[in-house]
Each structure stands twice: as structure tokens, then as C-alpha cells.
Length: 530
Image (cartoon, rainbow, N blue to C red; front, side, top):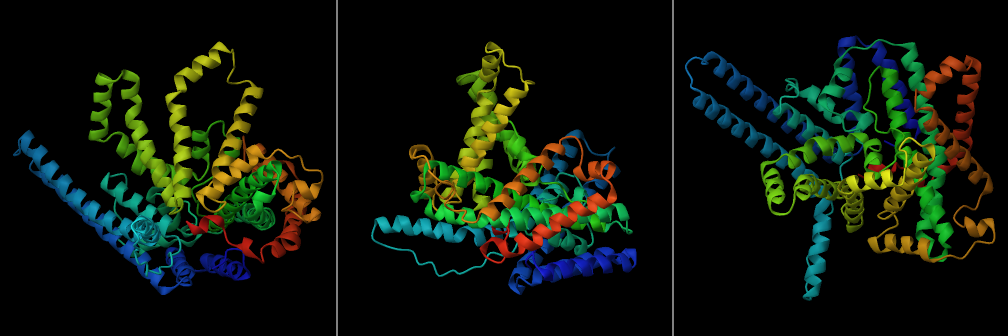
């Protein structure tokens, strides 16, 4: 179901009406029903794999929980009879048994994800290798990627690991686990929530709250404006620019890269605003996925503020387990003794970051361009970590104050330009084309002599004016949100009728510019492909 369509608006309106009319104990059942209806429109085969993931996660988590509870009860009951060695052996045996169940379930669900996302990529590489010897590998598999499989698989993996690590208890009701897996506002683009964050909102009864309903509606309108007016108009510009960049000046290619940064932020954060707003109207809080990312002062900070839930998932379930693993710690200790203290200190974290960023690149897309994208992000973050102490010494020698506004502005602009160049690498097409755009920007120095030559991909001046206004408005809103929510500030300082007028103006821009811009290829959300 297209999120920016009349059918979705009707779907959401029906849910809102029914949600507050049914008895409160049935509210979560209603959410489950609407989520399954939303998902089944993508096809029954996709629904089958969603149910397999939910069912296997429910069964494995429950088995792990019951086994852990039984072991705990046994050790407590026989505390006086067992020696310390026997207790340790019993715990080790139980942990190994639970780990086997965890591993089997992870292999099943991650295996389904990998089969859908990476088989074609692996076969393509096998074809390339076979071509060197005059052969070929037949690729007869034609799979359509199930909607949201990357998001719901990671979410269930996190839940299963949390049960294994005793961060939460396993849910006994399989339908509640199915709702946690399939909850439609987050299944297509996230956020990737933990059970402890999402479950209370899903299963706690809610009554209609005018303040939450009003604030949610305001955020929903803001999200539609960002997506339909800013992102969708820019989508046409960016597609044209990336297809024809060899004919552009370096400055025009650079402006196209900046347009892509604005587009992807308006697109992805717009989706989050729509879904967070809808959930707020229901009384449910979704995990925030953005915290003013383009105001970051380093690439590492940027990734703590962009797609926050994905970064947190990799940190909690990949980075930390790798960084503190026995083999990695032993390697770090060996390096301290043989190579040097500094190398030994940073090596475990470096190895974990290399794996995390290569996996992040592959999660975003099965191509060498995305692998390179992940690698470049990882290189910047690892280099910053290794150079942290020399960097501090340089700042001290140059008398640079971290709190100085000019220095902070330099860091922010520098980081924005870095992430902009990294972003476009996989989006132009192939990896070769991505590097070609970089080359065009830095080597073609012909100055444009007119606006059409400066912006050859943006033929309509009125649309350009609306996009510039939209980008400026997003910048101002992000700036104001540094201390408090803009909605709270507006409620306190702006009269009610003026606020209505502001949102009416946004609604008019959506109708006049957003609907025409959404009629073409720009209507899909960029992150829906992941």
C-alpha cells in the first residue's frame, strides 16, 4: 500500500475510528488485523515468510525462557546440595543448550533474509569469475524481495538476543509476537524497535487524548509536506542529474549531490514523521530515527543521529559482541605485547567496526557500490578513532576552542559535505559511475553562464522556489528543535488560529505541488527498497 495515497489515508482514518470505539482489551487485536491487511496486499508469499519469522522467533524465545527459568529454579532448590564446580558446570551446560536454540533460529531467519537479498549478487560474482575461464553460471532464480524483510528480521533478531541475554522476558502469546513483527507503521522503513520500547505501547490500552491526537496530526502533515513537496520534486531533479552528470559542469554536479542529500533526508524523515504522527494519534510512541543529523560535527556523530535505530541495532547486536569476544580481546592483548599499547587498545574496536560497516553496506544493498559506501564510512570513523589523541594535541597547539561557534560551524559544514559525497557513491548507478560523479565535481571547473546551465536538471523556476522554501523551512525547524519541540514552541507562542493557518498553508502546498510531483517515479520512499 502506497503511504502517499488516498487508500492509505482511508485505511488510517478507519483504524483511528475503530481503535477508539472497540473495547480497550481488543485494541491490540485491531492493530494486528490492520497490520496483516496492510502486509497481505504485498502478496501471500511474502506473508508466509513473515509468519515463519514470527513463529520461529516466538517458539525459540519461549524455549530459551523456559529453559532458563527451569535452570534457575533447579539451582535455587538444590543450592545446598551442589558444589561450586557442579553449579558452574550446570550453568555452562544450560548456556550452551540455549545458545544452540538461539543459533538455529538466527540461522533460519537471517538465512531467509540472505537468500532473498544476496543470492542474485553472489551468482553475479560467480558469473564474473566463471567468465574469466569462458564459462557461466545459470541464474534462473526470480525472487521478489518481501516487503520490510530487512527491518522485521533485524527486529526479531534483537528480541531473541534480548531474551537470551535476559534483557526482557519471552512473550507467551504468539499473536503478540506477530504484531511486534508486523506492526505496519514501521515494517517498511523502521524504526527497528526493541521489545521493551515498543511492546508497552502496543499492548497497553489507550483512550483518546486530544493533545496527542492534535500533535500527531500536525506531525503527520509536516511529514507529508517533506515527502510530497520537497523529496518528490527533488527526486525528478536528482534522477535527471545522475543520469546525465557527464554533460554537466562540476558545480552543477555538486549541486545535484546536495539535492540528493536534501531529498533523502526529506524522504526518510518525512516517512518517520508520518508514521510517528499516526502512532502518536493512537497513543503509541515509536522510537525516533533522527536527531538533527546534518548538524553533526563528525561522521561518527552523524551516524548516531541518522537512522538511529539501525545504528543502535548494529552497536548492540554486532559491535559490542564482537568487540568483547574472547578471540578479539586475546588479539588485542597479543598486539599490546608485540606491537604496542596503542595498537592493542584500538585493534579490537577496529576489527568490530570493519565488520559492522561492511555489514551495514550489504544491508543497504547487495552491490559493490554499497559495500564501498559502507567501507568509506567505516574508514572515516576508524581513522577518527585512531587519530583522536593527535587531533586533540593539534587543536591545543593551534589554540582552537571546541566551544567557539566558528569552529563548530566549520565542523558541521565539513561533516555535511563528507556525508554528502559518501551518500551519492552508490546512488548514481554502478560504483564506477559513483566515482565518475566525484571526478566530475573535482575536475570540471567550467563556470556556468546562466541559471539553466547551473541547474540543467531543474527546468521549472516556480518548483525551484518551492523546494528552496521547503529546504529552508526544514533547516529552521531543525535549528529550533535543538532545545525543544517546534510543536510545543508553537503551541506556547503562536495563537491557535495562526497555527491553523500555517498548517493550512502546508496543506495547500501539498495539494498544489506535492500531488503532481508524486504522480511519477518519485512517489515511492527511498528506504522502502531496503
